[in-house]
Image (cartoon, rainbow over all chains, first blue to last red; front, side):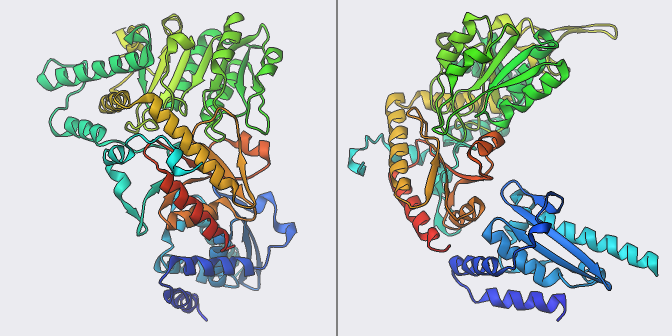
Length: 143
Length: 411
């Protein structure tokens, strides 16, 4: 599936909820289900510090594909991290650089990506794009 | 405590003065429990501020036209309102700033330049807001001085008996908060000032959280500096006050340079204006000052004793209810405390709690509360903070309690 198809699926998964509690309930469930990041990657250099919550992001680049692992100490953020991993992990740098996480807006959670919310999520998206940009440059050089 | 035991001033009448409280947030009636961050403004303040945009606006102290005169008069009247409210000896001791942060930076910078040299010491407490730590740290680094810290206990009480051990002949100033923005503790500032003055050490009081709850008499208190913000005491944002004793303000240099603060400028030398103008470079936020004075008028019209008893009752009610929640820990339970409750619920991240409460129309603060050392003291990353004002009600506290119970079940 393409990034856009996955985003569409997420939007559909969330569209059925009338009540905010169900929406956040699903995020909490996704957060609980997220595979914890390997403790050896839960280090300062992988930490994205927000004022209110923290996100750890680790990446690997192999055969032209970037794989991300991430986690947060806040469960709702962790749920959103899980969704971001669904769309951005195991992708080429080009796919990552050309896709915006529009689903967050469409499922009515845009406030979590505003720079003022400082929960580390916006910084996480920026960081993933920076990795993608760096790996794309490396790949171009090697060609 | 039951609702009927609470002495109730006419809160429904007071609430009508605060139009914002009638709003719905996320479809729910707003419950505003973030008053320690910023309080809401009564219609009297809003109208007065609007009046200066709609009908009167001229830069103060700079021209002879009608608007300039009107604005200057209102600005200087505002200074007198503040002087009278704080019972300062003279209006020259009231300096308008952008807020507590600027007030403290002003003293740290100017007092530091005049009186602090290599090897000197400044004392703060471990429960200060970053605004009463960082300016002193910066000044100490610049002047080669040392910052010393008075600790507090798990109960949220300052260990002020240790102050004697911290004070040396090199102590140049003590900066302490009147009320902790995290713990709500009301500190024994009168005792600290007496002790400091017995060794000729001046004291700065951070009144950001104290001024909204207590009427201050700076002469009775005998503090050397008192700093606070307008927006935490029902006034506009961007305006604050620094009270300073003339004997200090006359002797410390200006903080900012620019218009108004000068006496005569040449390229070889500039002489400075008198206090308070020496410290008010540039066009001040005169509309904010006038709005703050209106907020003070508003507070003066309330029954002080009844209001503070009511605020205390709200705190007691909230504390009792919150303690019924299993796994909830309140940080700071000093006997002398204002309406601030910082807490955590075991297994729930403060960000999650804040986010979900917002969905229910309840505004609280979550995060590190601009007080890293307090977070470190309790070994936590974040807290949730509910803080009350006199326009809050027992019904809102009950709704808050029920919301927490409901949210706890989601985790």
